[in-house]
Image 1 (cartoon, protein in one colour):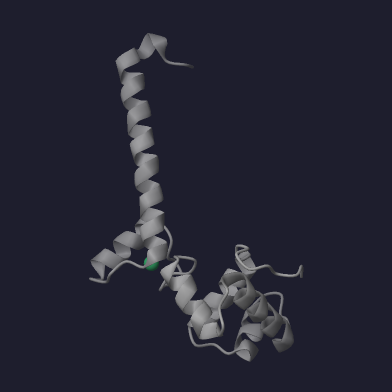
Image 2 (cartoon, helix red, strand yellow):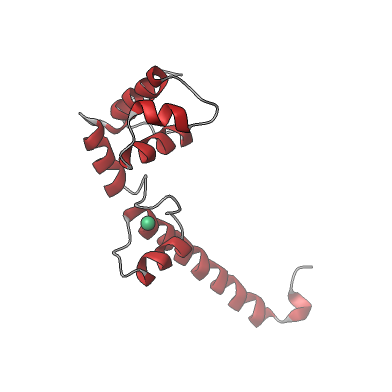
Length: 129
Ligand SMILES: [Zn+2]
């Protein structure tokens, strides 16, 4: 593993490990859950990298930072518009990760709408094949 630097984004693996820790799993439990299986010390090293990258003093602090910045969600499947809608149906406040995912979807939808309107105005003969 490369030496972590403050402000560096979490890797996919670090994000997954942090989410498992946020669910109440110890490093020993996470070591048994990830594939391929690793040692508890590997997970402890990963946790240290997470602390450095997020500028957190404890793993609890790291979970708080990651939740409020939308790096992890409150459910395993958080992060897109569908997950945002699931929060709404359950009567929950959407997590930051889902709010970011929905904002991205809205931005893409608006861009697609503008493109669609432009294509309709041009008519079928002017459309690119
Ligand atoms: Zn969510």
